[in-house]
Image (cartoon, rainbow, N blue to C red; front, top):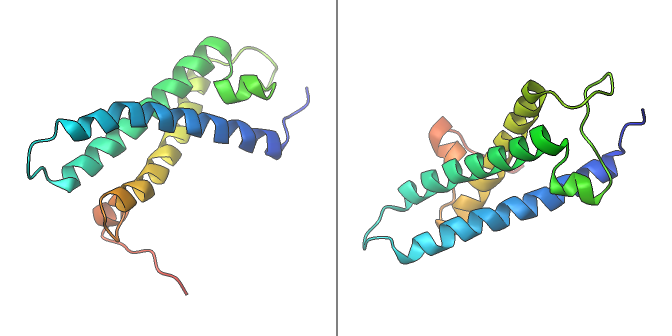
Length: 134
């Protein structure tokens, strides 16, 4: 068995991220048109973060547990397998998807600060921390 290069893995992750972002946008953009007047932007951030987690997790888990690959993996000729070469176990697909989804929430947290016109991300607000530059 030959492991995939980091370039291919990153490429697959980028493709998957763009697909997940498209799904998230398709879900959230129409929501903007139905928000009541004076809707709190902080609630929208939390809705976005929860949606980002769920979309990322379901996208990854369903595809990995069913096909052993996400769309990005398939396009770049990659497969997720167990160390012994057997088909990816459901538990392994769950754990891989969970980690990938947490990363997606971190990315969405930064994007949510931009869209909410805030200088703080949701993660910073939740943890009462800041990101500083030198």
